[in-house]
Image (cartoon, rainbow, N blue to C red; front, side, top):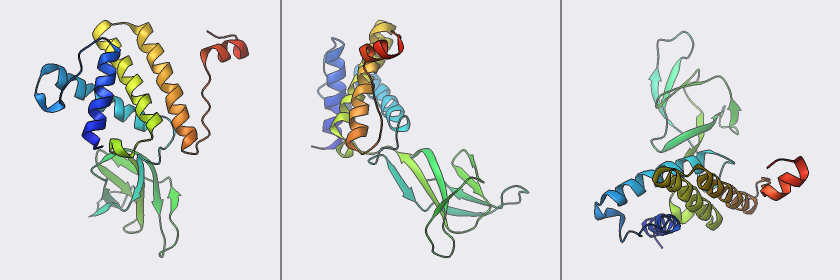
Length: 197
């Protein structure tokens, strides 16, 4: 299956989940398809940038060195990857050695400011294709999308919160499958353990 097919399946699963009609294609140009796809992309970005560093949505790359800058704080600027959603770490490799994290940097829009003219790497979150996602992550995105539709179409905050709680459970399962230690407890367990609703 292609990214577009999986994307359409997730969106239609969310639309039918709120009692709306599924779309035959996202390229139909209809208002519903346009709105659904826009909300979907917002949900995907939120899912990829929150929680653990998903192995299918994180990569380390060597950015492009733009050049020196007349700045008293940072001497060089680099261009961040065009598909960057969030920088997780800036790394420096000295003399061809293993890259190690540095903290002396600043991000200015699409530029990375550092005091190094070579050896810079960036570990960042990017918008990966749906075919790369873990199946449980796809399910989590679908429930997040249902919550977004419930909030936008119905103005039902309670239903949206319930859908987002279900999404968190699926993301937790995806994280465990990916080797992350991320524990997700049901409301009933939290109630027994902490006396919380």
